[in-house]
Image (cartoon, rainbow, N blue to C red; front, side):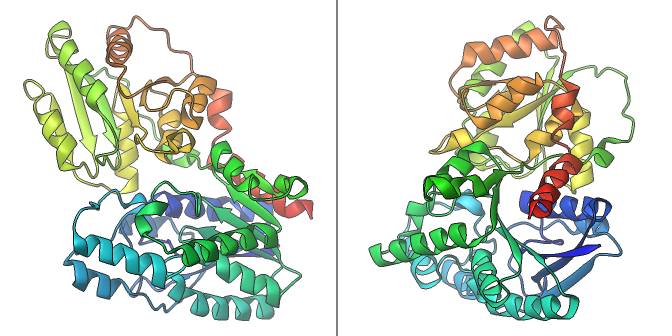
Length: 429
């Protein structure tokens, strides 16, 4: 069985969709002929925006995981800002106002290129080089963000030209919607773009998670190189949904949201629709929000009549899936921001696997909307389409809408099927 070396900063006990992606891939790779070997950061020295220690239970017992030290500036960041929590991708938990915020973003954007976790690279490259030599490894995967991990891929490819290197870029790099917030100087912007292009050119294959992001990267390459960029989406693990759920009907029509809900996740149209429906449904409509919900939307939702809304803090992944499956409808919200057409939240695929109607709030012509259409699992409405949102909820709550999801499309997004796509890339060479 061939070994494949995977460099990933985010690994249990870190949480988040990037962790889920590779935790699930390594589960299925051995059955497809590849033995994964993980190089990650020592969790005692790592800086994770979100943690989920329950994911440690999902790490295969036989998997080789090598943790290395790191050097990062986040201890200084915490002292400068007085914040205990690190910024999420996209800075959804940070405000732009204030001189200290600008100073910290300027420092992160200009002293640490492409990002503040670049200090891990020297340790990761050293350990990876040892493993490549000792085990004659022929396959390398680097996954980002942090995009600095891709620079480790460049070094390893230069040192070991025989490697088949796959660069997995889950987000855009210099085109990410919050890039301007980093306050880069023109010199740093040019340098960052050159690093990005070098990764795209040097990797044997580039993998990303949506058609929209693939097109962003393709435009940076000559036509004859564009085919190297492939889409391997996130997905759902069928085993997470193997347990039977109760068929008993809820006494309320319950709409559930699971995940982060920041200010950019515009709920104005949804809240207005629910207000209009309260009288019609005679108090039978319940909303459940599980995860990190910002104060702005929590206050808006709490103004809905009665005890129709409940909030629950972040829960382990298995509990999150259980929460989804208990609902009558699942709420999917795409943040209202540039590049929203290309955002496919990781939970979308788990929503599909629940086989429960999905109410999508976001760009009606985006990548997530297309998946909902293909699978017949739901509909996407623009943030301000109050009347259409209200009609969709009403028709589902009163059982006036037929429900015929396409199981073949849903199954194509299983983690196993996405692992098959990944293996096919490695087997082509």
